[in-house]
Amino acid sequence: MRSKKLWRTWVPLLICLCAAAGGRGADAQPGGRDRVDWHWGLRIPLSDGVHLNATLYRPQGQQAPVPCIFTLTPYVSDSYHDRGMYFAQHDYVFLIVDVRGRGNSEGKFHPLREASDGRDVVEWLARQPYCNGKVAMWGGSYAGTDQWQTASKHPPHLATIVPAAAAMPSVDTPLADNIWSLDEMQWFTLVTGRAFQGKIYGDDAFWTERYRRHSEAHLPYAQLDSYLGNPSADFQEQIAHPQQDSYWDAYNPTQAQFAAIDIPVLTITGQYDGDQGGALEYYRRHLASRGQQARHFLIIGPWDHAQTRTPQPEVDGLKVGTDSVLDLNDLHRQWYDWTLKNGTRPPFLKKTVAWYVTGTEKWRYADAFEQITSATVSLYLTSQGGAANDPFHSGTLYEEAPSASPPDQYIYDPLDNSAAELEAGFGETNLREQRDVLQSNGRLLIYHTAAFTQDQEVSGFFSLRVWLSINQPDTDFAASIYEIAPDGQSLLLSCAQLRARYRESLRSPRLVPNADPIEYHFDHFSFVARRIAKGSRLRLVIGPTDPLHMQRNYNSGGEVAQESGKDARTVTVRLFHDENHRSVLSMPLGAAPDLLTRFHVRSSWSHWAHRRRCCSQPGP
Image (cartoon, rainbow, N blue to C red):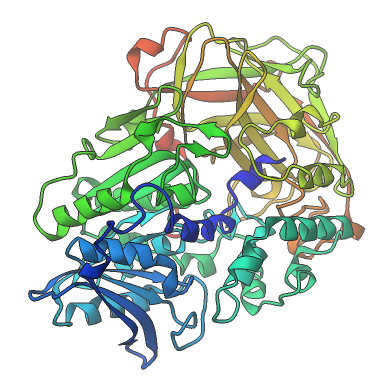
């Protein structure tokens, strides 16, 4: 299904570099470039003798020490020049530091292992004569992840972090729900060697064609790096750990480390951010560990991955209101003034949680994340005569439990490349794309609600409980939710995925023993905040995962990364919705009380508290 491509995690990392050069608030102040002293090739010594390369930006003629901000990046120090200029013009010292083994830094690059290096940079900076001992970090995506890693080492002079779109290893990258993305190798090519491979990385048509050919060849996922022309030891090391385990735990702060992070934190993510899952999981774990002592603010805008640094008035075909186009450079400055210079709290941060509702085009605020969702509505899946494969004669999402009806089913042949061929022809990803559903030819299950009788805010996390049977030991499922307007236009709202063997635990696989119905829980939908307009409907689509961008499961029950076309087994997936097997989609209603009259709602319920993504685990 196309939806998986929309939130692929590593691929948007390059876009964040482009965001540094354009958009509201991204540039340094006009006429102010003569007010910055600049030094290239600064050498920062680490505790093991390796030196990192940095570019230094200082207020011109700086006399007194001031707070220092730095970003630790694998994308070479030239990438954030405009950010350095901006903050130096606002009385901060700013450093762009190449991570170990990238750019002009010494050592060998190992992705996402910057915790000790980040700590060393903080403490070295605090000793410099231009620094007053207060050090902060800036950055998103990879540079959001290494902020959390640095904070986990508790360097004494780290005063605040502002992680945007922070990827969390094993939660949203390079695997999510233990399903891997082909785009992982596109990112590895970007950071292979020391130079920046921006042109190669950014050629989406180039990569799409190679993904299509890999899909048609039905080669094992483990051969992807060699097939794409860039054998990678790091890629091979990672895929040797196909599920959440101690290897992945080591990338992320432990519960004790989260509990000891007592500095102010501002988390920024977006509804269409490929690393939303990671950003929110850092937020959840920090609050779970520190409780009311956590000084942690959260912003969720109507943004994609790059726009978590430089918002735009449109995201992948969805136009948003001008109030969403925040000047995030200025907000960062205000945050740093507050936390580093004893300034006033940024006016935008009215409460600790801020989220934007598309459709209403307004920001909403709450004192706690749980307050975003006020109630849920249960929508039962049903169909007439077991037929839900046609978008024009689909199944139904109904508020009342249905009477007995035959199960719906689809058949998935992993050797069928027609869906991948269709995907390859889409070109630019667009949230309003629905050709994959309209041309699914029976390969999907599709359900619609009745038309809404009035506007309704939907904010929070969807949850899906479905009774499924499969006649093979394993397969992958995807579920996507759309708004369908009265004129037929579609808007993708949220997605989730699940591998059958991990239905009980992401750490303990269990193959499906027989073809009996099993209840599957899709609890990892992405966050949504949208006003569903009067006359619109919701569409739920269930089927296989995207064959062009996601690791293909050949359904044999073997090690998925080693499976190939010769292992392929066609699977029949049946979805039950009778008296003994209630399949239900839970819809989160927004916190606006005047909008709750459309549905028979049950009492307030925090889906956040019930999310199962490793909630009880010390690691990812």
